[in-house]
Amino acid sequence: MNNIHLVYFSPALSTRRIMREIGKNMGAEVKEYDITMGLGQSLDIDNRDLVVFGIPVYAGRVPELAVNAFRKIKGKNTPAVLVCVYGNRDYDDALLELKDICEENGFVAMAAAAFIARHSIFSGVAEGRPDEDDRQKIAGFAQECMLMFQSYDSTKEYAALEVKGNRPYREPSKGGYVPAGDESCDACGICVKQCPVEAIRADDPKITDMDLCIRCARCITLCPEHSRAFRGELYEAVKAKFAPMMAARREPEVFFNKI
Image (tube, rainbow, N blue to C red; front, side, top):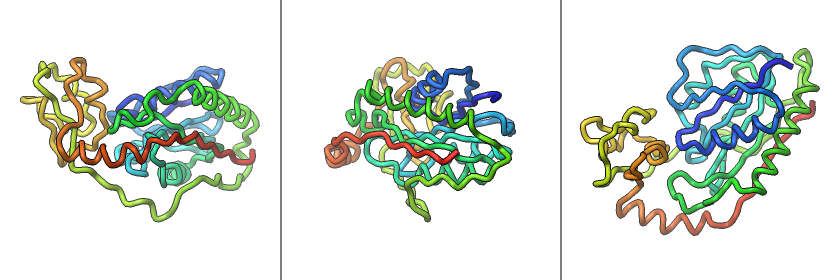
């Protein structure tokens, strides 16, 4: 055993929270790589290390920005744990897509999990998740992964981990609404600097470029004045339709390889 790396894309911070919970329960020191604002140089990770990759699910897929960053991270038969976080609807093909990306880059998927957090667009959905029951399941998953890591042999050839999902992956979709600021915006510029796709105007931070915005809700999470939110007739109509459909509680799902 050598190092444990937590690598995550987490604009609204929910994935980061779950990844840190995993790291805490692994019982070892971890290195964190928050790739939300990109990954500058490529990263090569030794096969004596363990990498935990974490992403939020966007319309059933791995966010494109995360895909671009993950492709810069290379392993050498390096063991990996895959984690996706979704807002109680479904994770569709995201976990399978993440597994494919990691395997293409030289990682061996030991385990994978889909955990639930508050929905980043419809914030009333899965409010309070992860809760205590979730945290217990996260802890159990992390501890089992550590046991697998201790038994991992990079010279052996392991069968591919089986996870839920389909190929071709779900076609990504994009709604016709984006976050915007209201009159409480004081133009502090935090959202402008922290937007991973530069979709917020520096001269008027209340305005968001609909063509650039990926609806990651980072600006909403980080706004100190709580000025930014999803608004408008279309958003409210979609919320009224889909929020009740996502109300039934979903439970975490975990997958383990034979090590």
